[in-house]
Length: 443
Image 1 (cartoon, rainbow, N blue to C red):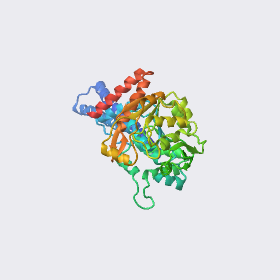
Image 2 (image 1 turned 60 degrees about the vertical axis):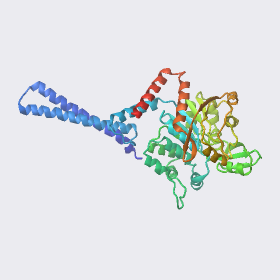
Image 3 (image 1 turned 90 degrees about the vertical axis):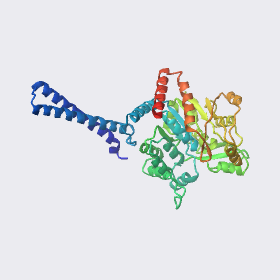
Image 4 (image 1 turned 135 degrees about the vertical axis):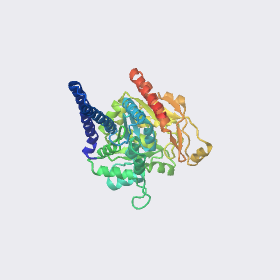
C-alpha cells in the first residue's frame, strides 16, 4: 500500500477543518457587519443572511465530512462506516473498549487458535498471536518446499481471524483452487507468499499483510528459523515432519514419547519474547498438543519467558482427543505433557469443556478413535492448576469446534478477575463499556 493511501484520511480531516474555519468566518463576518453598520435595507439584510446561511452550510458540510474522515482514519480506511448515530456511538464505545482491554498473548496454531481469536478480538485490541511455523503439510508444505519460505497456513488463519475485512475478502483469501497446478492451494497462502517475495523477511511480510487487512492486534511467527518438528515414539522410532507424526504413531501402534525441533537452538522473535514479558495474560491452545502448542514452547527463550512472566497463564484444553497424538488423554495428561517439554509452573488455569454432544455425532467420532477429553479435577489441582469449566461446544459442518464467543467470554472474565486485584477502577470502567456496547448492538 502506498504511503499516500495511509495519509489520505488525515489529509481530508485537515481539509474539512479548514473549510469549517472558513464557515465560522463567514458567520462571524455577517454578524459583525450587521452589528457595526445596522443597515436595514432589504439589500443589506439579504447580504447578511446570505453570509450567515453560507457559513452555516459550509460548517455543516465540514463537520459531517470531517466526521467521516475521522472514522476512516480510526479504521485505517478499510471500513465503510455511515454517520448513523447508533453506529457511530457503537464505534466509539467499541474503540474505547478495545483499547482498555487486557494485553493478551496467545500461543499455538491450527484451527483452534484462529477460532479463539475470533472471539477475543471483540474484547481487546491488545492481542499478540505467536504462531507455530512447524507445519509441513498441505498447501503450506508445498510453498515451504517450493519457495523455501516459512509455512503460511496457520499465520493466514490467525490474520483473517483478527482482520477487520468484508466477508467477501475473507472468502476470497480462504478460497482453495480446485484444479490445475494450484489445486488445493489457498489464495491467502499465495497472497502471503507474494508479500514475502517483496519483503526483507517473513516477519515483515506478515506485518504488511496484517496492515492491509486492518488486523486487530499483532500476528507473528514464533521464529524465523526453518524448524523441522520431530517426534520420538515409545518404541524408540524417530519420526520427522509435523504431518507425519500422528500418521506414523498410528501406523506403528506406538504413542508419542516426546517431540523436539531442529535446529534445537532456533531463536524466538525478539518481539515475541517482549510481548510475553509485557502481557497481562498468556493463553496456550487450543490446538493439537504435540504439533501446534508444544512446538512453540521448544523455541529458545519462549519457555523461559513463560517461567519468568508475571502474567496469568491459561491453557485451553481440546474438546476431543486426537488419533495418533492424544489417544486416551485426559486433561491432566495434556498438562503433564506440556510441563514435561517446557517445565512446571507455566499454567495457572485450565479451561475445560463439560458440554455433551448427541449420540450420533459421538458415535461418528468414536469410529475415528476420538473421544471427549475427560478430567480428574483432584489430579489437576495437585499439579497446582485451577480448573474452569464450561460448555464450549459448537457444531460446524458436522465437526466439533470451540464456541468462540463463549470461550472468549470466560477467558476475559478470568483474566479481568485477576486484574481486578491491581486496578479496580479500570476494570469497572471496562465492564461498563462492555455492557454499553452489548446493549447498543442489541438495539
